[in-house]
Length: 93
Image 1: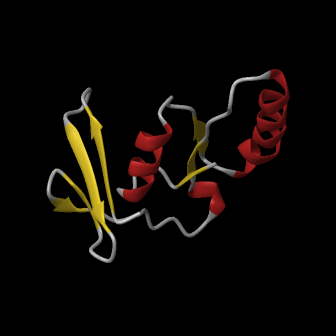
Image 2 (image 1 turned 180 degrees about the vertical axis):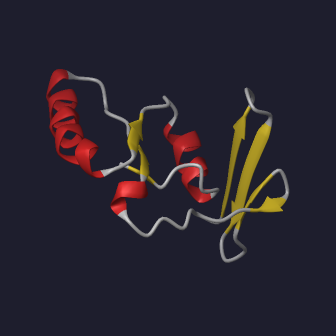
Image 3 (image 1 turned 45 degrees about the vertical axis):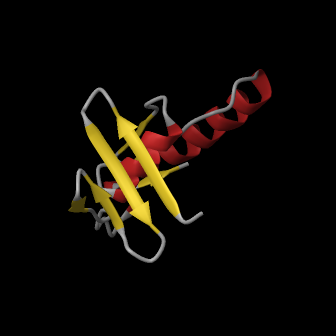
């Protein structure tokens, strides 16, 4: 992958990245968050459709939830990854 673009029409935000040149939101350089402890983490997650994958995801949530600040499911993996890049989220699982 050499270039990536994600557009969020609800927030009118465009995330861009070029290999070796960093990542940007609406032309401004962005950076991942600086959380040092898992207890400060805002984790995003997704789960493929299907009973088996949902069951596995829920088992993971049960283990992870007591250790992190919160877990969010926002619906768009692309946007969740962009939000990790700009520090709104700590990680995507």
